[in-house]
Length: 333
Image (tube, rainbow, N blue to C red; front, side, top):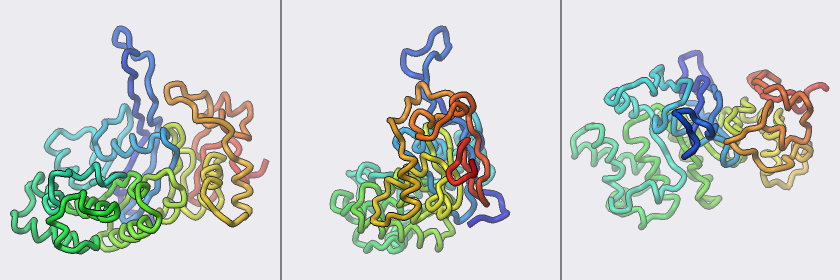
């Protein structure tokens, strides 16, 4: 789902390094963590972009930069054309109204000392939006939108179920009428049946508010369900990018194929057989010392000499589907 209009979110050649404690000398960083290394993509209005990868792939660091909680070492993050890293304090505060988060564990992201009503109204108060009476009315409207009764406003988070708490988190994210919601593993802590309810609610909210989502997960099956397009990250790099159905049914990168193989299924389809042949053969390399050439080569069952010396760049394998691999799956040899 894309349009010719300017993207809601643009991530352009973004890099994020974290120096290791005690790893510098004379002002020079000797060792660092390469959390994100030159990632670029764009998300258009009312689109859900899924970002998937293992723990340590850089997904959450990228999300924190989109939320302006971290500043890129290099590159730019733009929301509706605004370069977040270049804004001074007051303009950045105003720009944050455009982007709101939904975190993995709503229990830890909601203040246990506050009741639900003030929790949802807190962003409005912080941004000096509306009067107290208007905020209370807005809270009731938001609770209704996310499928909760008005009396929930008087409860504390510990009095709610996990699914109810995540609905409260969604209501709080909607309070400032954002353009973009960054959802970092929003359903991974929930039971399977509740996951489906929250994902369906997120889809309904997207349609009714014309929301744009950056949806982050380690679970490719969840991302496939909700996302229009999928980006696959590995060790700080974007290794595959394309329409959800294409990436899932015809993965072009061996790492993506391994993620597909990890999805539980009773269908011994050709996709699953192809993915099995591409299973990773070792653990992820360290982000403090990433491999030369292709970062996935130390785990890849089809790696060759070229993978050691030359880093692959994203290239098209079919319409709208890009892969960073010298030997993409299903490509002529």
